[in-house]
Image (tube, rainbow, N blue to C red; front, side, top):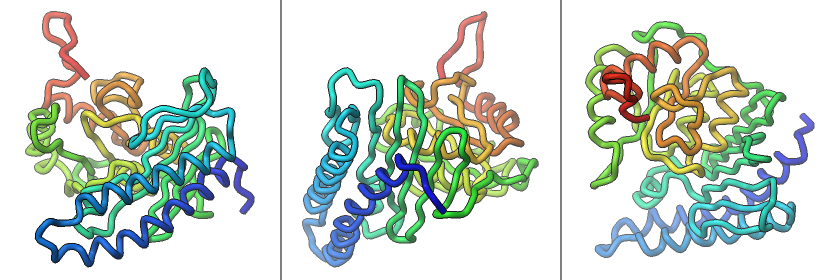
Length: 276
């Protein structure tokens, strides 16, 4: 299958960074026996992937700006196009030798997301999409699932740890979601959660407090697979709005209603919107 040039650029850069991550992941698994642990090693693996992606993407498209998790902004100043990149989504999984992590790259043009790619190097799965051209897993067309009952749906989420904001709302949602659906998964890599919604493996994904590099590529891929992506409260800015809800085309309303009822996100009191 002939892929659009922008996808080839993203995948080439991601696969080059992935070679280093795969090598380092093998080392991390061996480091689990050390008392100190592999945290510093993983940080350096993350930085190496960052440098590779920054160099490869800048070389391929020198006129693009860049927003990348580890090293911040860069690239061409004032550019209308930019890359939004997570060099290693699922760092905690990587740190513990859990084989579930990815590289995520999105292309934003004039403020609109127009292409995205998520590479799972361990499974050799490349999820990609270009706006208006559909979504794909490697060379196979993707479509969100056709399930239309909450009782049959599997949902994914991520719960903030430590003192990060949003934990109370996320925990409040778990009870109702677990009672009314077929299951909840917390896998630890938001980009892959979104890719799995696009592939029909999950019916929905929701989370609070994610950064643009966590979700940018996945937003494009879910939408091109026929799904819906909004803020939990119904807002139209899941990239920067503070929350995200991605579903198939059947369950966006029911899942959104369930989450808003449980958490208060997006509900109104006396005409004032709470948040979300």
